Image (cartoon, rainbow, N blue to C red; front, top):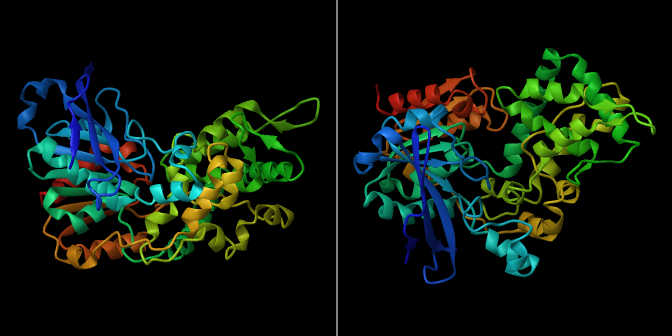
Length: 440
């Protein structure tokens, strides 16, 4: 049985009224009388509509990730500004994130052994998130369906929602999150590495000097130990992970500015600058969202088989990503992005205490289906999705195949934006999705 705490504090920002909500939900929805965890969600209403907020429909925002807390708004801007024209918005901290019961290196040891931690985290995938949403929806909407906006992994969750609880949805809007319905993790990463190479080479075409800068850093790391201010051990492979920047609209420029300030002279010779280290540590850190690494490959696991560090295994099929060999052969260093590897757990301080847990999750069997293609093929919920044609994180062909499966889904295919389009040009993107879903 769902327990809800009365709404918490209500505060005002310029143009906004924010209200806290807390809910107790089962850890395992199949065992409603078993252990419960807490969920936190922030209701956002336009200040000029607060007096009649009860008449507004709800829009639930599902954050990307996995393992990332919902946006923390500061005034009206972006997609939220457009949503507030007509909705009450609910920003949900998905289980394990933000102000919901946390799952981090500090809290997970409370679960017991690594095996007990891994078993606990097996309940943190999209299917559980959707059941959380369905548990809290009646309490907030009085039973009425709501609109969902899913960004990236949030879009994966929206597909799960459409699969198993479509009656809870009035409309589904998906931004950069049309997952393959049947591709396993190996298939996903075999498609991902060529995209990473393409993005890297496009970056070097824009900033030719960065190829030499990256090679110099890799060569330096081969002979010098570098530890970033937060304790991250910077190896060539960890350095390559800065390619995650190339998935955002301004990321190539940000990567360039990072590389141009990489070295400073010291009494011991050239070393990576504190400025470079500070910025790199912030980009690489998983302190606030360790679930991003621990559960990342499980979002592609549906056939009962273990993922077994898929991205790491598949990387060996693409020898051009061997940074040291690339430098030795005078080839460009290729950046990587949204991949997780066992050596990350050793290199990143927030993950080190969770190494055994990470290995057990990688070896876990029995992952069940996250989508129901048959239900999606007879879908009646209005759905609109933007597919970013050159998306670093989601294979376009996979997204298009899914779009063709979901009955009634209206796709918008564009290369005007990168994966963060709903953040970079959120009002335009959300307005377009709403018009498409309404067949306007």
